[in-house]
Each structure stands twice: as C-alpha cells, then as structure tokens.
Length: 521
Image (cartoon, rainbow, N blue to C red; front, side):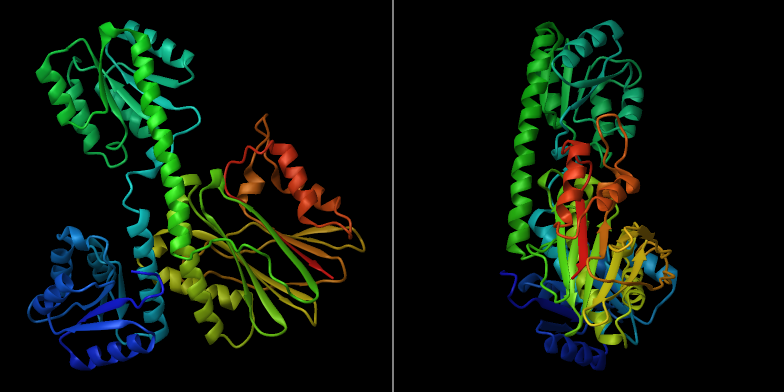
C-alpha cells in the first residue's frame, strides 16, 4: 500500500457510543474505520481486511481485551500490528499487563482527541518502518566491523593458540576460550562476528554450546563454525541441523580455517551493503527524512546545517525547521540514545513522532516558548508506553526576525554556543532540562539571547564533541570554541568548523555528525 493511501483502523468496543465517537474522529482525520462489538467479530475483520492498527476496549463480556491481544499476537500475520487499549483502567499494573500481552500503548477514557490521533499516526508509521526492514536479523551482527571479531572455543589451548596466531595474522581480532562456559561469558560480554568452536569438550560439548547460543537473542544470529576432528557424516548433519554456517576439520590446518572465516566475513560485508541500500530505499519509499535536504530561507538570518550519518546509515540524529508564523521560526536538533547501527530504527520513528508532537504542541500553546513546546512533546513521549523506553536529547530554538531574539530550551542536550561578533566573546548557554521522556515534568526553561549583526549561534550533537583524533583525544567543546573564534563575518560559518573537525579526526567519525549554525544578518 502506498504511503499516501488511507490507513485502516479497527475499533473493538461493546459500547456503541464509544465506537461512534472514535469512528467520527478517525474518519475526520482521513482513516478507514472498521467496527466490532466483540473479539469474535474483530478477529474475522482482521483476517479478511487490511488493518493497520487496532483500538481495543479492555472490559468486554465475550473476552477481555488483554486475552484478545494475546490471541492476536499468536498469529504470525499480526505480530507487528499496532495494538492500543482504550480503557478507563489507569493503574501501573494495567499498563504493565498491556505491554506483557503484546500491546503497544494505553489510551485512558475520557481521552484527548489530539493525543489519540497522535498515537495512531505514530504507531502506524513505526509499524510501516518495521515492516520494511525491521524484521532483518539482528543488525548489530549484520553490520560487520572493520576488524572482525572471532571467538575461538577449544579446550586444547596449544591448538587454539596456533589458530589464533593464524587468524590474527590474517587481520582478524581473535579471542580464546578453553571451555563452553567461558565462551558463553565472553560472547555475552562482547558479541563477536563469528564463533568457531570445537565439538569434543568436557562438561558442555560443542553441540550443547550451540544450543545454548540459540536460546540467547543477542547471540543466536552470530555465524557459528564447528572446528573438530570428528568427520563422520552424522556429526556433520547434526551440526547443520543446529543452523551452523560451516564445519571445518582440524586436520585441514589453519589456512583452511582462515579461508572459511574470511568467506563468512565477506558474505557479511555483502549483507551489510544490501541492508544499507534497503534502509535508504525504505526511507525514500516512506518519504521520511531525519535531516532536510536544504536549510530554510528566513529573513534576517543565515541558517545552515552539516550532517553526516555514521557510515552512511540513516542514524540517531534528526534536524527540523518549523515556520511558526510570519516572524518566527523554530529550529530543532535531536539525538536518539543509542550509538551507531542501534539507533537507526528509533531515529526514523522518533523523527516522525517528534514532528507530530511538535505540531500538536504548536496548536495548543499561547506563545512561541521553546520550554512550553518541549514540555508538550515530553508529555506525549512520556505517556507513550513504547516510545518512552527510548530516551533522546532535544534542542528547540526559536528566532524572531523583527526583534532578533533567540529563545532556547533543551532536554538533556549539549549547550548551545553563542559568539558575540563585536566583542569576539564566546559563551555556552546550558539547559538544565531532563532527557526527553525521562520524567513527566522535564523542568524546561527558556534562555534568551539578543543577536546583533553577524552574531552567531551553533547547535551540535555529541558526535562532534566525542569524536577523537589518532591519539584518543576528544574534539570537545573547547576545540569547537576555538574553531568558532576563527570565524570571520564574511565566512560561511559551517566551513571553518567543518575544516577544523575533519583535520582533527581525519574523517574517522564515531557517531552521527550534526551541526546547525544561525547567524544574524
């Protein structure tokens, strides 16, 4: 289904008034609506129609909503279907029960219409992203490191050292464990790219070791190779029944082991490139961007940004610009908690969620106050049962082209940096607000900066601050201030900072890189 086609919502409630109310609001917001009085009718509708989200009452005569949700989740076709409970139950026990049975969220009666529509929009978008590429095997293992990590498990220490020497010589990072128990501990502490294991070991043999790994969600997808002196057909078949990647006889020698491992790493590299391509294609197909292609035009200010996603993967940082009215604009910079590959999914979901939450906030506040906007967004995030599990930093800055006043509030973010062109002084303006979604009240407050001609404000995420040089030294705030000090009024402010940063890191970045510059004209 194309992204711009109507989405369908199934309402399950034995109260006809609630069904009519939900039906009216959803249709008003361009959703197709199906209605069911109870679980039996609802299950038939699920099986015979394309449903994008379920809104379900908890207390029903035929079967309670929690039990119905469990039944729905047992069907493979509905595992990722967004499922929201609409109920008068408000206790933490009810919220925990909702998540335990596979629900995505709870909306309490009487409900706020804006909150309801926001949750529906967000959960459907999150589901779309998941359907496109969320079912991939564990991405952390699919994206091979530059230096592949091999865990070698063998109770023959001398032989293990020999294989370790040859693997290290071939450019791999190889760690040894002399028992399955130690191997399991090492694998859990530092997930390897490949596990190579002997079969004949005391206490826990290789087959048992493999079965233990299959019970661990973080390790089950790691390619597994048996290294053994046992070459009987039954042993080999038993190994492949456990989903191993390959089987190498010890008598074949170290060169064969190195060749096998190299082939698997090469295969992982191809898988990584395939997933990278699919991530970008999925983002394009869903019309989702975490960073705009171009900076906005806004009279009286020169606004620019620089963004490099980690290794080219759409990642954890997001940037947005909101025209508030003819005279005011909001600048938004966020960073999802979670480094590198782990943040890509949440960034897309968060970018859509924050944009929707911001628009709702802008419709309800009386003035363009960043702290008020931020608190509204924080409240929406905090109340969302799934999104609240992911913390993010967020900076919101509003600028007024008539007064040249910038107002700023932040949620757990890095301070903004202000340069006064006349005096050359550089100051940090630090927010005391909590991470987005960390608590119901974020304690946000507005900071005000009056800008004169050629004064400069910059916003950054920690990818710039925490990146290191070849000696392990961080770029840091002080280095950033030094780069700002060198900026002349006629300069494009991005370029001196970019040049200083690239020269320092030699383009070996450790996270998403995001920078926004705002210069008064």
